[in-house]
Structure formats: C-alpha cells, structure tokens
Image (cartoon, rainbow, N blue to C red; front, side, top):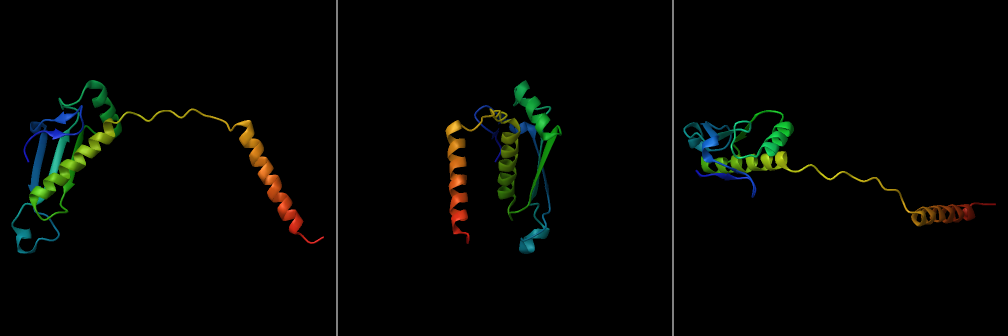
Length: 135
C-alpha cells in the first residue's frame, strides 16, 4: 500500500503527505470486529502539499472549501480494502476539485427554417384537431 497516490498524469501525491488513522469499525466482522482496527481515516492537507502547481492548488482550495480533506472508509471488513477504498475516494475528490472549468455555453438561436417548420407543424396539428370537431 505505501507509495505515492496517483491522482492523474499531472498530480502525484507523495506518501509522506498522507496521514492515516485506524480505529475499530462498526458493522460486520464477527468475533474479529472487536479486536481489529479496520476503519480507516485518510487526511490530506491540500494547502501544504507539494503535489500541486499554484493554479491547481488555488482551484482545489476554492472548490473544496477547506484546506484539508478527510476521508473515512469502513465499508469493508479488512483494513487493506478500506485503505484502498479511501485512496480511491481521495483521488476522485481531488480529480473533481482540480478539473478545468467547463466551457462557457455560447447562446444560440434557432434557425429561421427550424422556426418555420415548428410553426407549420403546429398549424397542421391544429387543422387535424379542428377537422375532428362536430360542426
């Protein structure tokens, strides 16, 4: 498990910047649930990280709203699988935070032909319904 966390091609978080905490997990586990520390908390300080360039750090801090991210994982019975789940969730959260903003929509208007076709279809439908009426 130890090693850098690869977020994408541009961002790789060194293992030293990840803070792990383990505790007893509630939920399934049988007799072992009271003795194993399978719940995982992964904390990452975005503001102090060396993994980001300045523009990416600013974007991430703006979108996350807090300088640190804490991910808790306790859905699996084993600590190893919870560690993997926490790493995947952290990577996904950072990917979403540093993603470039979406392109701005350029407002368009319907073409004259499409407007005429729409109005002709409405008139045709109106005529069909009018002809169904009793005179």
